[in-house]
Length: 324
Image (cartoon, rainbow, N blue to C red; front, side, top):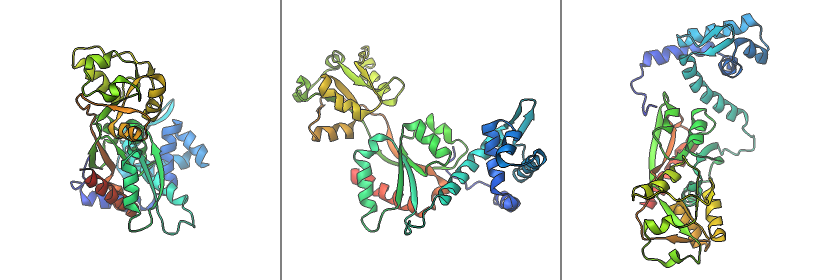
């Protein structure tokens, strides 16, 4: 992953652009079809081309990019490492082309912005962003995808969405290696503990880790950031993490179940406060904050010029300032 591209040779970039002027959309689709189908023959069938024609297309692409993109053998063909890197960029371009094709004549000048986000973003941050967007002008049209960090980065790296609001987890960000990425920190989202309305912890001024260990728990599955932070709360005090009563990925579901099951749960602090205001649970206080990292707006640097993304980024920055 790169965070800038100023060191790229401008003569090289210009040369590739000129050489690529004769490439057609089929050239770009062809590389994706080889990756998916495992052979030039499979790509030829989908594109309704002869074997010599598809071979010529590949040769033209390799001449433009100055490297071997596909290796061929008895079992078909597969992309080289260079071919995979080229395809990663082409998929983003193809996805943008598909969005343009899907445009509606009735859009009334309101461009489409495809955003992805962690579910916690919808609790407090997203409403503020939307209010900022509509303060002076109509908002763009949106498609919204909710997923975990890995799923969001997959969608961003393949061009299926334009930006994400997520945690910039270093390991997960490896999915964007080779791409120029812009990361705008927004806010820290710690975890908090929630208990049923009539639970003794609801009014307790202080709760010990030993007391928490003896409770029934609803927690996310192992391997998630929240579960790791939850387990660390006990391990750091020399205790075994409690065995969960329920394992569930959705903090919305977990917070709704807590009162009915008489169990505690752990969730993003903004979500716990939201459900506490609704009278669904109580927040448990009197113990250290459990940090899980910052939330950030992440997008490809090549998308920065999109007017809809520029407006969205401004609205995100304003929401971030309001939280500080």
